Length: 250
Image (cartoon, rainbow, N blue to C red):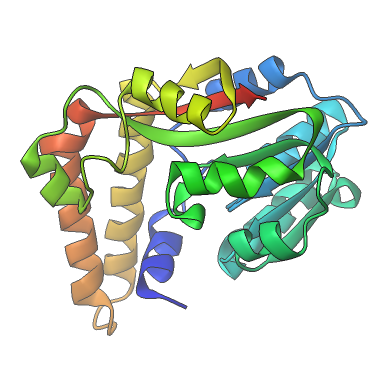
């Protein structure tokens, strides 16, 4: 397990939704997509499986989620059991990009989603390229992605280790989707307070972990992870970065 994955598992211990979006925002995505009992969903890098489980419970849809983290998948299985949807949610531990390329049936899903994890394809364009063959005719793609709120500052790029072209502003993001052969038909953008709650809950979770694990070999790195993330968000991320779920069709 990489340090990054282990650290994120600890940082997101208190989260149900592993993205900067509220429950109401995630529910709005469902209302836009209007799944039915016949809908087949593939969620790449599904985290704790909240989208899969919520749709299965509310709409009767079925789906498959793929994630690297056994910790997150354990939480997803518990969530599926609590909602009574174990029979409609399949959870696969593994690399989402490899699963998309080698195991997922071509044209096998009505909805293919990747929320907040376009690193699986090396960025937005590569992830859309991974997802596109898996969509059934007339299917819907959901991509959760960062966007710039204007030109990013050099300090912001340095704080997060991003390049200026890693993301685009909203018009540029729509243009990237169009270049990949998809039209932006709707979107649910996170409010600043959604991202505040997402990152601040991470701070609380890491703070609790540090208090509960004095002398742990990871202590210094976890403290640096907390300090760097908090400083980057407060100084730059909150003002310069947005996040949204983009609803796409061919």
